[in-house]
Image (cartoon, rainbow, N blue to C red):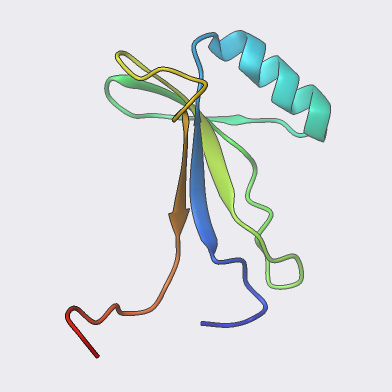
Length: 88
């Protein structure tokens, strides 16, 4: 894995009030979130900033029935190479 890249590949921030959350994050970071189509979910993605000269990751605000915001309301996915199972 390159040391130039963030180990974070994707993140999800779960919300209850999507319009309020979109307004907050768009104003705070001066970005425009983009709607992603997904059955049963409302997803609004942060713009992709992880270009070769600007490493990073992107993610989305997510509204999903049965998933609360707050404690446990953020999921971070890490990018990594193959993982070996079992003892070394």
